[in-house]
Image 1 (cartoon, rainbow, N blue to C red):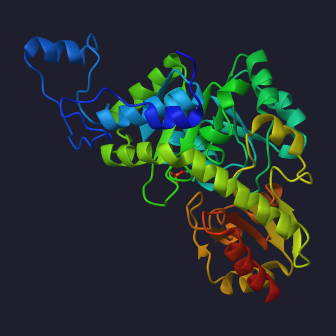
Image 2 (image 1 turned 180 degrees about the vertical axis):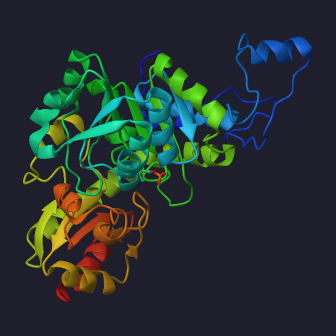
Length: 390
Ligand SMILES: *Cc1c(COP(=O)(O)O)cnc(C)c1O
């Protein structure tokens, strides 16, 4: 069969119907599964027989969600988690040993940065960082004990773009893994495996759910690596709930239309902000002024749903802007159908030192705007009147 388009796979990839002939995938709220006899029970636990045993290991709904995510990312296998951070942590913990070393982009999600700085050193795992401006230094950071290169692209919140093809070549040359957090792009906008990634991690909480309802995470990649992640996770229990898997599988059915519209809204917002006198700078991967525009258009279908900008007037300017927002939500989430404005310096990245914040492009007046599905003219009007108050 020819490979179908993204939208078709996202909607039509579904397990075989039960004898009830349901059209839409049913929800399997069950913690366990029964066996016909002792032999079946033994063979199932010995993995001689592939089937669901217990929902910490697998469940029809998580299987369905994972299967779709694998097809959409071009991966062999995957495992679904209760949250994006459960996916990040479990993937790392499954693959790392005491004494290992990570080479990571400096600009990573606040909680991931917290793992690198607060917890991994306890287990003798150190991390070295490279910036978007000095990607050439990556190779010089690799040590004999380096296990993998890690990055997010586009980054949170600065929407910097990293060249995955380049990073994967360096990883291959040194026989180490290249792992990408693809949360900001989703499989619709970009497929890191095509550019050489070994594992792809998602927070499904964001644009994959897209309606701000559930948390979820997923890691996909080769059978061999996912097997390690699975074995660690079935012991430690970070698995996604069947209910969340059911919701997220439904969400994938509408991901393409939502992302098309939200990316279009984001581009329009970025263009509006670019010429605004109260805005110091604006970053959006598909604006020609973006420092990594060429890389962005090479690896992304559209520019994403997040625009990052800096208002005039520093802390005070930022405060005035946020206090005058009327329509958009002041919230820490992103990828929602509702447009959200966030102040990374005091929220998601508050734990970083001022120096670390600046190094990843977060200033006192930096605003992260996650474009939703409202009419763009209404959203621009809200942002415009709040900027006017500065
Ligand atoms: C939100 C986010 C995470 C964590 O996801 P949760 O579902 O909130 O645990 C990880 N990486 C990135 C890039 C994120 O934006």
